[in-house]
Image (cartoon, rainbow, N blue to C red; front, side, top):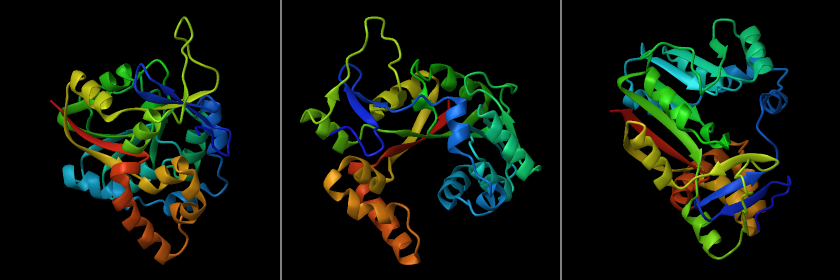
Length: 274
């Protein structure tokens, strides 16, 4: 338990009650290689994210709102927001990826940037999306939250997703199904560190300490959690995780809703700048 087919190891950090994923450090070069796409324009045009748009419109119904995505990757979410009329900007530190996106869609506002040091004035955005970013920093995400707080307008919204220590993963940890993480004497970053899976209570505490009010949070992507963490069911769930037919897509949606409270791979937090 704790090792998948790709060689990824998951260790339980008992002191911090989180999972430590070891596979490969998430450097800019890593993301540039991962996101290589020779059909980037087609990818962007087909990447409309209805889930992201639904959430954004619920809290920011004014489509002239300015929204920043920190860690935008290939720009699919920025493209979705841009097409809906929002003033959307994306930043990422994967330089080759950003250059490819700008070449593919020149009108899309994507830039090279560091989520820990944002090159924007105070109170520049009404909304900020962070999708699977803060968990990749061994040193923590305090600087990231501080910068998000700084660039948001008063009562601006943060939409944050992070891999979570789900109820199922907590149960597995309690049963001793993960190898224990043993920090070094200097608590330095281990070789191959990729990301954390973080308990909801930790994220909520840190958001509040950074000056945010947490409005709601819930597990998301329960099927992927089952695929990654319940070995016996992985072969049956895998075809549904990335569905190709309409029937499979409908089935995935229903099963995700049912499974996410217990198995959700990630957790969505919606917070407002206090």
